[in-house]
Length: 385
Image (tube, rainbow, N blue to C red; front, side, top):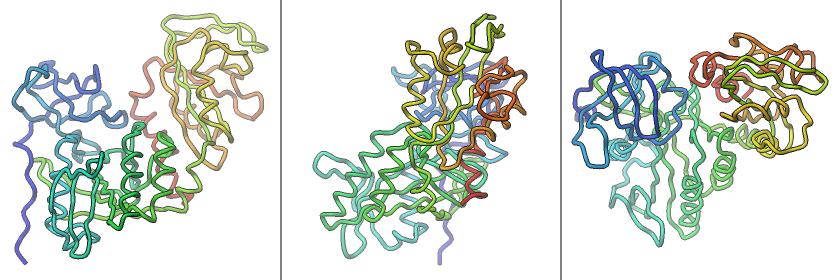
């Protein structure tokens, strides 16, 4: 059998240090002690990867009138391992894996066409396996825990639509495949991110008898060459179907631009220092509606958080969907990393000291906060599943 060489899609990269992300497609970083901007070809949130001080891998690409810079981010380092971010190159990775037989369920299938159009839909590849046509949609997955990978990291109506269109092709006698390229070699399990996009998760569970779900983990070297091979991950469907429901816990993140006194119902008037506040709550039914209520300012005040929301700016709402009530466990976790808290806030119906915690800086940019979120959203599966 001939030796299969690593795939090389990029020139030798150079490293920079991440500073901030002004918009979805632009990052600011430090390169050779200079502050520069680089194009980011990835619209995902990437909040758990693009943390201040993270090592970026850059290439210089031809500039265009639509771009502010010739520098392009191609990867970010996580625990010493590059995670490829350049979504425009994902299909080249998929082609390499398919043509070299690294995807067992597609072994022997021949790529007939890229970007195959059927009716009003377009899929990344049309293959033929010797018996029938195989339509393949490719997704890039960078949302990973220690051993668990999830997709997507932001709501994707387009992703759910692709699944439904693939299911219709299956009904017409075609093979339908969604291939997730997981850019983390240590992943062992794959799940749809039902915390972030419940509809996508429920859709993929609903069509799984028609659409083959293949998550393949790959290993990128530090020179951004791709190691030959792929590891097919386990998908725990029973766990996914049980947990992909509109219930669980949530984190509401608010900000105050200055010290503010707020009358918090029976708690009285409290001085809130300027900064960011994380409120931990739960709703074991209609979780989405509860979160939407917290986003609104105009409403009848009922909970302590309603009074603070009236004075603070809304930043984020982060769901932790679960069939278990995890609110107090999550609050305990946040308490260990928060610089201060507001005693008695939101905890009158439990034994916790509080469910509101303060931070001087945006907690979403803190590695400790992302690690906590990763545990409850992803890595907890290994204990419960």
